[in-house]
Image 1 (tube, one colour):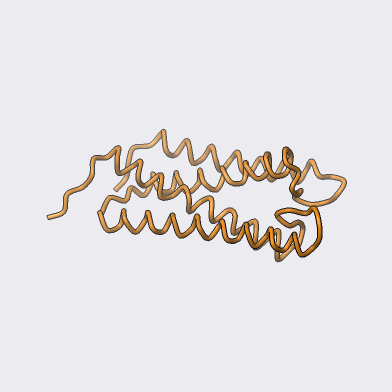
Image 2 (cartoon, rainbow, N blue to C red):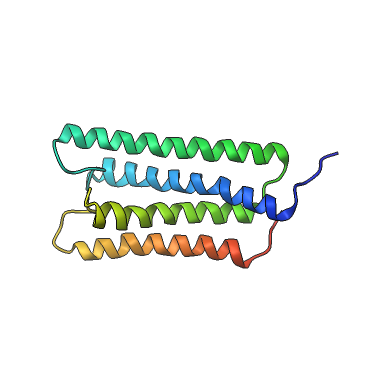
Length: 151
């Protein structure tokens, strides 16, 4: 006979498991699409192209660490039969948006490590980049707060 964890704990654990997966997934999308396929920027655009390539590798390693952590946490939830799907989706969306917003505000604007794209209409790219982050973050937080747990 399997016993289930109390609902708030199950929801919290599921949200926590989805969070690193969302962070890792958005970092992977950024790395693969914008750094490698489109070649719009590197994680750190200052310095030599070799340094930029190394900085992309460090970002890639970080995204993999977040993905492994998320899958490990999901594995534990699956083993314990304690997965709350809606809370996991909420954590995933929050992770997606959190990474996007952090990247757009901190990495792009405050630290100036790189820009979305090096064009004259940068504000438009920033608006889409940061706006997407805010939208995903708010969707995840609203999903976590407004709806009861699903099983």
